[in-house]
Structure formats: structure tokens, C-alpha cells
Length: 398
Ligand code: SF4
Ligand code: SF4
Ligand code: SF4
Image 1 (cartoon, rainbow, N blue to C red):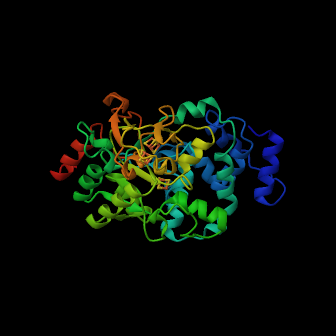
Image 2: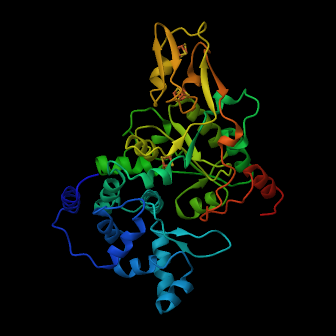
Image 3: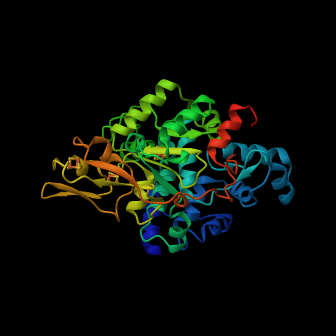
């Protein structure tokens, strides 16, 4: 953890001025982050760039509806609603679950970061006007030595989904780990959306001050400005289309996405549960999840699969080693071997082995994947398997 003095210098550098005098309300706001980010000198300064003092006051009353917040504070409802709607539109708040209209604060700066970036992309806003905010969020996120409470809170909240081509031949693949089936079933009911990758946008703007399609050298096609591999499903897809510049994917886009994901070294990840609402496919260069992992926050767990090496087939070409972003496969004395403690079961090495010497095996029982997150209040994710949800949509019951 940086000392208070070092954090102070960092904030002054980013703001480009001596520290401003902050309203007391931001100290109260910072308490929201006490567990996951204790002793962060940065937090109130970050909040002062996210919210006006009036907005911060409203946020401290959430979750709830505009009526509830107005009543708690003894204010007129309409100005409160207008302020909360504006915060929602610019990604500074989350919507409450369908069926209970209202707003929720995000006590996780990563989520705010993603929401704001998506709002900026969708509305074509000028990122450069908010650079101090974006830089403070990056500094907040990358603070070394994260507290154990934060590690516990986010450990395993995501899971790697194997490349489809690496597991398509295997029996017993679950719906929530079968990328083609997930994409296909949601596409058929018009609930599969694609949107521009916000991590790529952050990386590009923070490094170059502009969106740059050729910023990354990984060869992942998604980096052209018009393409996208950031996927949302169900109600979340509707929200992405309505608010974050997403579009519903065609069958052709689905096929192209799947092919490019298989060919690239991008890692596919989803929330670690059986209800699929979001899938990320990002290369190590820009992915915020990979970045968290490089900073000691193990946000993802491996898939249920791991490759085994057929030693007599391996020709020692080393392609698997160069494809593995987790440093989990090494070629020694002409034969590849897998580091079980490092392998995330992404299948990147399997799909391109020219000798067919790598084959995925199931290494974890189905219990590896939690059935349901009971406290997930932000999206309309039914408490049942996604496959059943799709059936309901097909039958027009949702
Ligand atoms: S592709 Fe992944 S890393 Fe990029 S914005 Fe989407 S979720 Fe984030
Ligand atoms: S890519 Fe296949 S053949 Fe080449 S070293 Fe790896 S396992 Fe062996
Ligand atoms: S060895 Fe590396 S590339 Fe292969 S499945 Fe494991 S993590 Fe992925």
C-alpha cells in the first residue's frame, strides 16, 4: 500500500494542482469503500470528480427509488429523479433489478469505471475532458497490496470459459461453459448484444489520448473500432443496447466472433455462476481482469477443463507455450508439459496445436460452478439455469 504522503503526491500529480478543499460529504461517501479499500487517501477525491455534493448526498441514500430518496431527505421528488437519472445515464449509478424501479450505488470502483466508459463510448463523449477522473480511477484500482477483504470479496467472481473448439467434442459440457450454445440460444431469442470493449477504450485513451484501433499488437480482430467482442445476454443485453451503444448480434456476427475468439489468444470469462448475463473476451494487454490479477487480485477461477499432453504426438514446436498468457505450458526436451497450478483451462493452446497433441479433460465436478448468486440484485437473472430461462423466452413467458 502506498503511504498517505505518496497517495497525496499522486492525487496532486493527476489533478495537476494542490489538493482542493473537499466538502465533508465526500468523507462520508468514502466510508462506503471502508471494507474493500481502507485507508485510501484517493477515495474522497475520486468521489468529488464523480459526484457534486448534492449528488453524493443522494447516492448515500441508495439503493432505492427517487421517491424514497426524496422522502428520506425531505426534498421534492422531481429534482431528485432528474439528478439520479443523469447519474444513471453517465454510468455513475446502476439500475435496480427489473420489477423494482430505482437506483443502486456501486461500491466497486471497477464497476463504476466500466459503466462510465460504456456511457462515454455510447454517447460519443470526449474522454479527454474527464482524464483526471479516469486516471484517478486507474490509480485507485492499481493500488499495490490490496487488502484481504477485497481479495476475499472478488476472488472467484469470474470464471474462465474454454474456447469452444477445445471442448466441443467432450461429453458432459454444461450449458454455462458452452460458448456456442450460450451465444446461439440468446441470439435466437434476440437477447444477445455486442458492444465496444471498454477496457480497450481505457487503455487506448489513457496511453494515447485517443481511441486507437492498432494500439494492441495481439492480432485480435476486435480492436478495429467497429467490431466488438464484449457480450451481454438477456435483460442485460437490452440494457446494453438501450444505454451503452450495443447492438443485437446477427448470426453472421456470432459465427465471426466465435471463430476469432478460437483463433486469437483472447481469454473468455463470465461471472462464476450458471446464469450467463455477460461474457468478456479480451487479450492480456487491455483486459481489466488480467490487470487485476497482475496486481494480486485473483478475480477469475479456472474452467472445469485442463489439457493433457499426448507425449508421443507432440513435435515440440512451442506454439502452445507462445499462446499461453498464463505461463502454464512449457516445452522442454522437445515435449510440452502443463503446470496444473497455473493452467486456467482456457483452451488457447489446444485449438492451435498442429499435432493434435493437446486434449481437454474434465478436472472439476459440476459443483465447481455455483448454482446461483442469491444476492445478485442488479440484473434480471432468474434463479434458475439460463437454459430454462431461454426456454421461457422462446415460449414468450418472460
Ligand atoms: S471485453 Fe472484457 S475486458 Fe473488454 S470491456 Fe468487455 S468485459 Fe471488459
Ligand atoms: S503446440 Fe502441440 S506439438 Fe507444439 S509443442 Fe505444444 S503440444 Fe507439442
Ligand atoms: S496451458 Fe495455458 S493456454 Fe493451455 S489451457 Fe492452460 S492456461 Fe490455457
